[in-house]
Length: 122
Image (tube, rainbow, N blue to C red; front, top):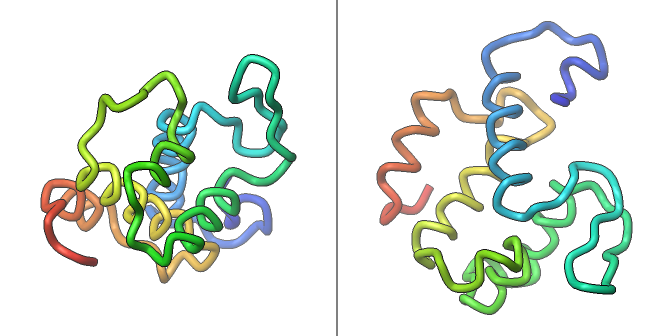
């Protein structure tokens, strides 16, 4: 849920941008936004908000994610069925879209451009 809803701030189209990318993060990580989630047969990860967890993983990699580091973030069932450059771009765009400050988030048209232009650095 976008911070604007939680803190009863004015609602803008940036709420939809936040929600869209939260769904994308949930799909590619197979993790709930707020609860413990099994990621292996008997493995449970600690409870952390999904956005914070992804942001930490990307930050640990100094934003130059390797395939192995991307695999740590993605749903394990995806294995190697993804393109590194495209997945890095999706993660980068997603983290921009889930910024707490609505003014720091891109518009949906900017999101589309960034996703289609995966070879550019935003």
